[in-house]
Image (cartoon, one colour):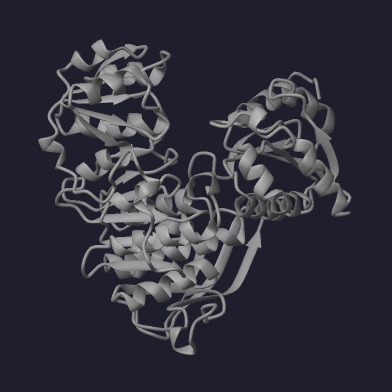
Length: 507
């Protein structure tokens, strides 16, 4: 692992290394694009603190009306006048808001404090232990698992997660004053450097967001910088089976950071035998929607003695879920010194998170699941989990690639994972911030060719657009199929429409 720190010029708009004032010192706060799932949860937490909140968004929504009902002043459309709704002293934005936004431009011209969303979250952490979960894959589910495990022990943690928590229906809550705060820490824009957590979990360190970082070395430098933000005396929990995470663990130890790891074989790649994983997973098994493994502690971890073995059982599919669950166990038991038994019992009843292998419904003998996976390892893990959950049934995958650059850079990896499906429907690439004109040769047909070349016998189909996809799927499915819609774009609308068509007898 390179160790000379990240190139901070990669974050020209926000200084994530700078101290953040406490929330009570920010004055009235204005949120640009307050209706988004990430921003609305943070805005609600500021409202709960009694801080005046205003916000704007380009379109009306139920979320805006809900925030208005809770005391926020909201307006439709972006206008500099919106900064005066509550006399904003601080403006909070996400990386998606460009500097040309009229409200942001006016705020900068007026000398108002401008914070990134992550800095707004950090402002809420005063007096609380932060548990920050980062990684290319699994951080949303792991964050939800940690939150649920803490609740099972009787705590009332705050949390800010990238998807609504099943059972609450929201992605952020303040929790009890002074309780731990669980944060899904986003590495995609470098903002995970801001939290200064007592406990940091890194699920894996893999090449992703290369449109931002440029190369793998810069990605690893950013994770090293993230580990360096852990509070003195804090803990890094990471994955011994992942080569990038193993290098991170070795680097963090050299820097004097306390590190605990989990792994399936007891040895970290590229590490000495003395660096065996602190929790070893064995007897991993999956059946349908359930998974289980034996966890053996090789060192004293919290209140658990070295040599003790326990069963981890999860009501979610995929062997990767067991890695996420073990990370949650270590964060709770080692980081917060919570008792092991109730943590395991809580995880055994884990209800899941929105768009993480989430059951959409069933109609005509066809079961539909939706998942947010959008990079190659995530897609591969979801397809493997779906194959297990299908339990002999035919597996139909509808995949919407996310970003032209990601599709181009990782096409072979996507194809290898998708080739495990019986039937594959490829939607057009969801460009998000990228334009097709920049990548004229990158289309879903590229993935179709690579999947076909695998020779797995997968039936590959191309969809013209999102709108026609439910009808095309309806023509492909039959009773007994498991259908999984996969992607970070608007493919999440396809599953409900497919079920409606089946219910109407149009399949």
